Image (tube, rainbow, N blue to C red; front, top):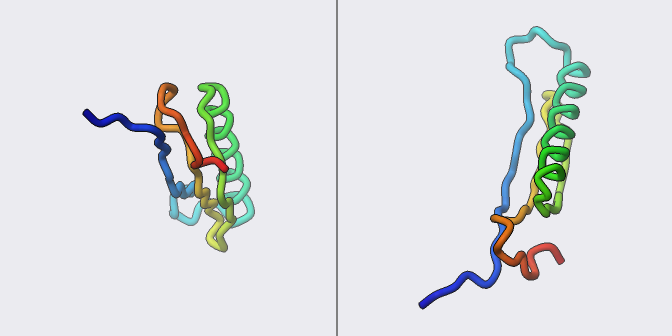
Length: 82
C-alpha cells in the first residue's frame, strides 16, 4: 500500500487583461495587481497554506506569480514551505 507523506502544488500564474489595446500599460498593471491581490485574499479566506516564491511585473502590464500551495487540507506540506 502506498500513502502520500507530503504534497504541494507548484504553479506559475499570469494575471493579464485582454490585449485589445483598450487600456494603457499603467492601468493594466493596476488591474492585474488588484486581481492578484484578490487571488491571495481568496486563498487566505479558504485557509489554504501557500508561499509565493516570486512575484514579477512584466513590461506588458501583466503580473506573474510563482506559488507553492497545499494540495488539500488533509495532506501534510512537509518540507515544501521551508
